[in-house]
Every structure is written in C-alpha cells, then in structure tokens.
Length: 358
Image (cartoon, rainbow, N blue to C red; front, side, top):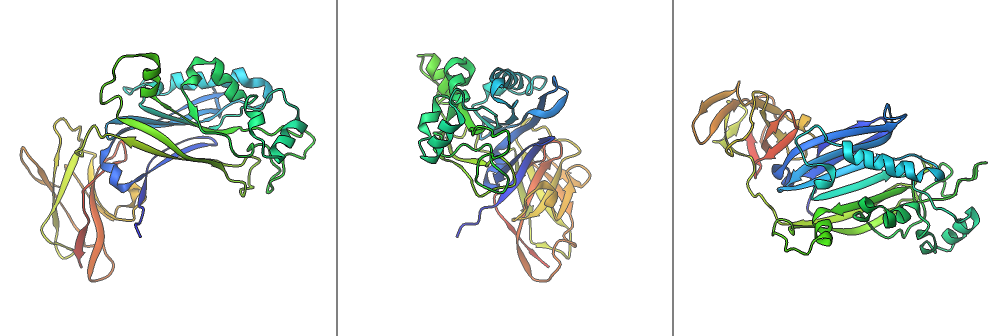
C-alpha cells in the first residue's frame, strides 16, 4: 500500500475564513512564489466577517490560485455579492509583484457564496428537493443566472448540482429550517474553477503556444456531506485532477548529504542552487522525518551561513549534529534533508531518504 505523505504548505485566516494548502512531498521541490492575501468587504471594508482569503503559487512553472470567499447573505443582495466578488478579485495581490488573480493559469473559487434560489416559492423548492428533481431549480439559482449575464463570471466552470441544496438546516439534523424564518433552501456553498487558456481560446482564433495548452483541469466529483450537523450549512467537497506539462524540471536547490551519518559525530551536507537563487542569511537546512506535516516539524537544522564550512562556484557545505535526533539505538531510515526559505516556509526536498546509525 502506498502511503500518502502531505505537508502544510501555507495558510491564511481572516476571522472565520480559513484556507490551508497541503501538498504531497514529491511536489514540494517544484513549488515557488507562494503568497497569501485577504480582503475585507464587511462593514464597507473594515470588518472581516465577509470577504476573501487567497493563496497563490507556481507549480511546475504554472500559476495556480485558491480563493475562499464569504459573500453577503440574503435573497435580495445578489448585486452586492457580485460587487464584492469583483472587489476581491481586483484587490488580491494588487501591491505585490505577482500576477493578478485572473491572470493565473488556474483559479479555484469556492466558499459560502450565499447565492439563493430566486422566484420559486418555498413549497415548490422543497417538493423538488424531496423528489430529487434538482434540475428544476437550476435555472433560478442566482449564481447560474448571473453567469449568463456577467462576462467575468462566464469564464468560471462548475460541476452539476446533483446534491441537495446545502442551506439552511436545523443543527444536528438533515431537516431544513423549521424556525419562524423558514429560510428557503439554497446552494450557498459552491466550488468553481477557471482555466486561463480556455478563456483565451474562446476569445481568439489564433494558435496557442505549447505553454498555453499545457494545463487542464478535470472534475472527478462534486458532492455534499449530509452527515455533518454542527452548522446550518452542509459542507461541499470537490475532487479535481490537474494535468500539466512541467515548465521546469529541476528544483531550486539540490542537496547531497555526505558520508555515513551517525549521532557519534557531526555530519556534512553539500548543496547547490540554480543561478540567481535568492538565498539569505535566514535560510536553513532541516532534517525531517518522512512523516513531517509542517516546516516546524524538523528534528535538527543548520543555518546556511552560520554553519557553512566551505564554498566554491558549484556548491556549498554546511555542518550539523545528529546527537539529539534519535532517542534509541540502531539504524533509523526515515529521515531526509530539506532546504527552507524562512520567509516563504517553502521546502525544497532532496530526492531520497537517508539512514542514521545511532
């Protein structure tokens, strides 16, 4: 059985909005330029109960962005929801040297978007749900209606809504709202995506470069989870496959632990970086168990400048101690070395694990 190792790459939070990105260890050496951002839209931009949080990165040379939004509530606020989303799109990373949100190769947009089902009465909506005739409600879903009119929304893709509307439920039940307000059910919780090359292809007839055609997104499933009852919303998940042609194949840093590693003496690690690599005195090389989940899970480390013992045009060498790494004697096989940039918490992994004799 293959063990799937994931590590937290980045996170961003704005009050109740939280976005976390976890990555398979094999992909970490090819992730670069990680940035986070948040935009408040509640109370005229002063309060973070509404708005958006975003994490963007470069993956194998392709730019990918994840945006989690909480938009204004209530049936009558469709225009406000659209205005707030446009504002979030415009304000993310506006003062940073990264692409605008819509300039990313792939953009995932999700969250409590708060769009409702217009026109139909509550009895028709509930009857359609009870009979699992969800398609009768799709044309009056406010987000579907907006996608037909708003140009910037037409570029976003969503899977079919083949599950019950996810709002509003009595807590710890699968019964729709029985309070005095009796809110009409709605698909408030959504996951959409946008592929830049598809948008360009739709607007031009020119041939596209190999780079522009080198990434595609496939939706594998789009479902709700009715068993969760701690909220008046039911959570929604989407599973996607991203197929891409790597635009880079070499990690920024290559590490080479030298000799036999033992807790009885100091060990040496050589590393080399690609030309122009932006190293700093705050960078460090860490030793991790293969099961690590975060950059803070190191078992020992060496500063790339303070612990440097030799340097030439091709590589540099640092020294560190393993005396406190393993609390028992024998051979420990589950360790590998990583180069870390403190400012990004980004890891560049070596390609194999190493044994330590204790």
